Amino acid sequence: MPQDVLDSFRLTGRTALVTGARREIGRAIALALAGVGAKLAIHHADTDEERSDAVAVVREIEQAGGTARVFGQDFAPDDAGHRLAEAVSAWSPVDILVLNASIELPEPYDAITRERFDRQIAVNLRSPLELLQGLVPPMGRRGWGRVVTIGSVQQVRPHPQMMVYAGTKAAQLNWAWNLARQFGGQGVTVNNLAPGAILTARNRVQMATEGEALAQRIPTGRLGQPGDLVGAALLLCSDAGAYINGVNLYVDGGRAIA
Image (cartoon, rainbow, N blue to C red; front, side):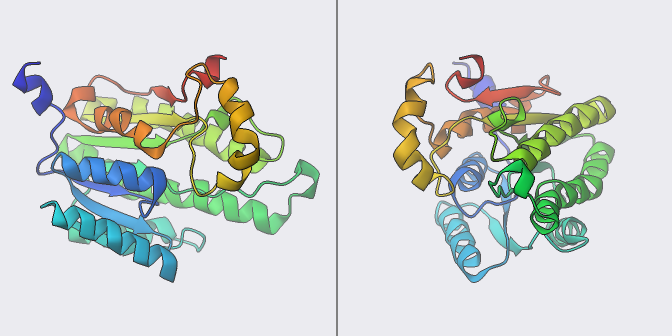
């Protein structure tokens, strides 16, 4: 392959903020972006466990010769997204925003409480919106930017126990389409990367009992791993994907069409 094609994936001189980057999908994407030259802001939800994990990610990046810093911010409080945007921007202007952090609180639709509804809305929608408000317009003014929202197959195949979570992922996809229209002419692309059944700590217990049956319904015949998202993320975050805008890209082994 010609070297100039490979060079289009390089992110030297760019700064990326990956929310929820302390483990699993966020960690895999952050390490990949750092591996092609980006400076990384590693966000976590500001608990002792999450801070420790995030520090380990930064250490791994630095040991490989990269640059990274930890930023802790719980997304539930008011103005959390604005505060994170300001803190990271003071460190370095953000060129790439990967909205990965989210929570899911499974329960029957008729048992959803106001408290649990509000928490999922705050973490999955309100704080991400504030990050978009704070970081995307400056990308447009600089003439280059990448936004990748991490969605879910739940956008179109909602689980009966995840009405709120699935609804927030569908809304996030709508936002990606909206912003792609608004900022595409300013050198900013906005795309949604939708994982299928990815084996993570969040679903490990569930997949221990349901995973084999689910894998049989996936055309590739297996559950995904966090690293399976890396290739698509690098494409959407780099110049290699400069003409990809407003796309909902499934990385699900074909589950969406099964």
